[in-house]
Image 1 (cartoon, rainbow, N blue to C red):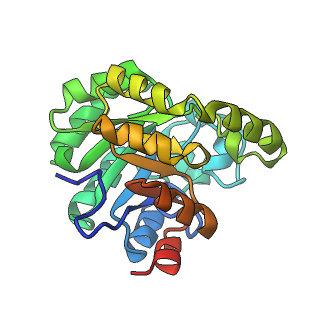
Image 2 (image 1 turned 120 degrees about the horizontal axis):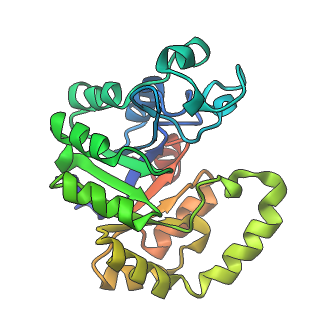
Length: 263
């Protein structure tokens, strides 16, 4: 079973965000291979359902995001064949799971639920590919997390905090508002995350890096919960969250780990 706490040598877990989104198109097998090259312990990716097709890897329903500007509209309005005309590297969930089974046998899977989807299909695919012991499923919707855990024995769940399904924290024009909100939230984080984790039956907490404090990490650890910080792309932020005691860090550019922390 893939550990969610720090490694035995004390090193934090190194987690690639959407594979290695800074190095290759996000949520693609090429991005996953770039993450492996950088030496990650886990790879995080997003899953979306197509009403007229399979589960695919995509962060949102925005076609311009999935196609990198080649097309506009909604991902879920198209079939897989239509999507691959504008996003040829878009993998299905089965293709991604086959990659982990065949090419990355020692790496953990961090599946991030952005939207409610066909949860039974997701859970069954995890079992079918023999990946339950290597998989953690995270999100903000507690019933969805519980449903996956019930369906796929051995899969662990993690509670994500706060809710950023719309990627507000990644929009520069909203940073002043986001920063103010995070500053206000910081004092309430230790108690809040413990309650949410208990409701979800979570095995870990995925915490936005600006909310990471020694107090929050200590409270989570006291409840038996490892803390994974997201999404960290600056060396100063990486050093800060590691010093605060987090167990793992999620980054768009996993080369930051060796460059900042050493091998």
